[in-house]
Every structure is written in C-alpha cells, then in structure tokens.
Length: 182
Image 1 (tube, one colour):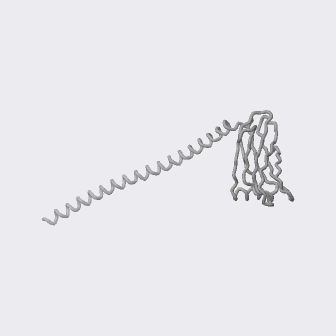
Image 2 (cartoon, rainbow, N blue to C red):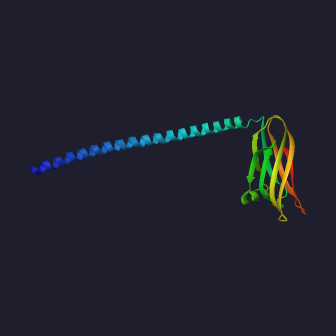
Image 3 (tube, rainbow, N blue to C red):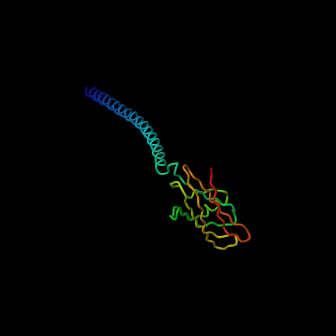
C-alpha cells in the first residue's frame, strides 16, 4: 500500500517535471525566434543607416564644395631623388589654406610617383593668387626654403591645379610649376 502511493507521487512529479520542461522549451523557442527577428531587424536598420549616411555625405559635399566654385590643388615631384621634402604651406589670396609636414612614408610615396591632394575648397570666380612655401633638403644636403606664386583665373566649374616640384643637378634649386588639369 505504501509502495503504490510513492510510485504515484513519482509519476505526478515526473508529469509536472515534463510539463515544466515543455514550458521552458516553448519559452526558449520563442526567445530564439525573437532573437532571429531582432537580428533581421538589426541588419535592416544597419543597411538603412548606411544608406542615409551616404546620402548625407553626398549632400554635405554639394553644400561644402559646390562644383561650380571648387578648387583643388595637388602636389607631385618631378625630380624624385633631388629633394627630401620637409613641409609645404599653401596660401590663396594671402590666406593660409593648407600646411603639411611630411613623414618618411609620405616622402617615399611622393618619390614613387604619388600625388597628394593638398587642398580642396571653394573659390569665387575671378583672378586669384596661389602662394606656396616649400622647405626641403636638396640632394647636396643643403636646406632650402622657397616661395613661389602663381596667378590664375577661376572660371565656373571645378579647377584642378597640379603643383610640381623639380630640382636638377648641379645646383638642386627647387622650382615649382603649376598646370591646370582638365
């Protein structure tokens, strides 16, 4: 008699345990489904943010640098072994617009034929003056500091100027030339 009551209690306890386990499994399954839904929602929102970010960047570029007033100045080295460039300063109409100190890595990149964008900005149409100050060490180990000016006319549209540095033997005097890119 006592033996049957114990076994019934065990069966009841086992049934309760099975029901509890089923409830836990259903809660876990619902949590997993919700987590998958959250992952999909997170991916969708991330893609939406990236799309908005791209649109904001495009609008920002149009507002900050409208195509009809844009001026861009690029630097190249013509005599790659003749100058060890230290710094470049750039002035437009007497106002400083760019200044750059060169690291070894940047010098190497320029010596290998790289092009550096020194300045991008807005400029009204008309006559302007670009002044550059260059400090470098020439191939004969002299320190040089040279100023050069370039007068140009800004027309509607984008104006791209290439500033080329050159120093030839035997004096290794730096020369700066400007070319408009089409």
